[in-house]
Length: 206
Image 1: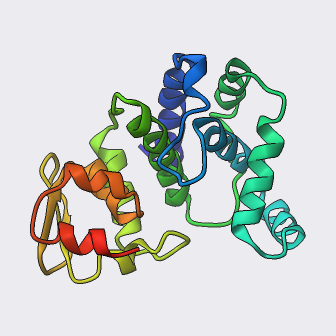
Image 2 (image 1 turned 30 degrees about the vertical axis):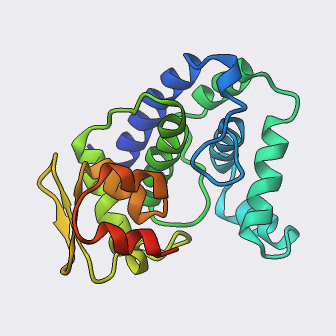
């Protein structure tokens, strides 16, 4: 399966889960600090409308602040829409390949991680094919793009307990691969699912 096929599969699975969410869940906090479930889904939808040229135009219009741009984008998408309408709009975008500049695997990561931002906050956890998670983990272990994952895990060994995957040297951090991905991308609640001498180090890092 190529990366775009993985992205489509993850989007389709997430779309089904979003469609089943109770309306009152959409205004609850996600794992993205300051963002509700509605905000996260709006951000994901907005991203699918951003070609490289449009991305840079929006970034310039936001004073070169990625955070400001993201906030503007998700608010524009979610304004006046019901949860049902947002879930349907997300589903309508599962096939699009219009994305901002960046490695294709980063958009697989975007879907996996933001889906987890929603459902780790609400429960229950989502399931992902191991192939997808390995691709995402392999990308982030070598990338400091936006979330500084490579920097965060420097000097640590991350080892999955549910897949044949590990990286790094140093004190160990062990656990499910999806929890390792969430931890390396800065989601502190995921650390509760991990064990090993390196977990304390991750807790101390921003």
